[in-house]
Length: 75
Image (tube, rainbow, N blue to C red; front, top):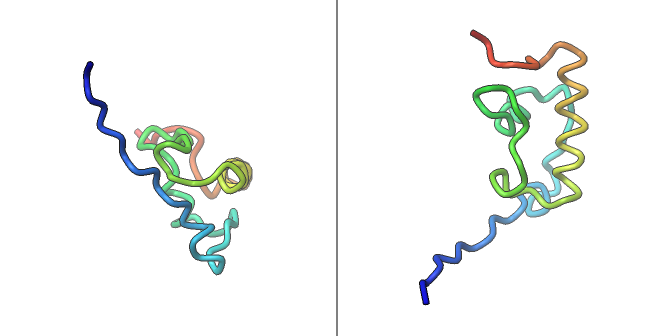
């Protein structure tokens, strides 16, 4: 029977530090949750909890519509 390397789940940085806010105007923070191609990273990669991942997605889309973030990779 193969042994699986069970990794410990990342803790949500927004739950650990309540002073962190998710806002579409904080582009530098939001950029960390986008891939190099401009896609929104999934929970398993960001380590965010479900509630904060939903909020991140909303704010990332809002920042895209306000032209603060690109929709696709910059070529």
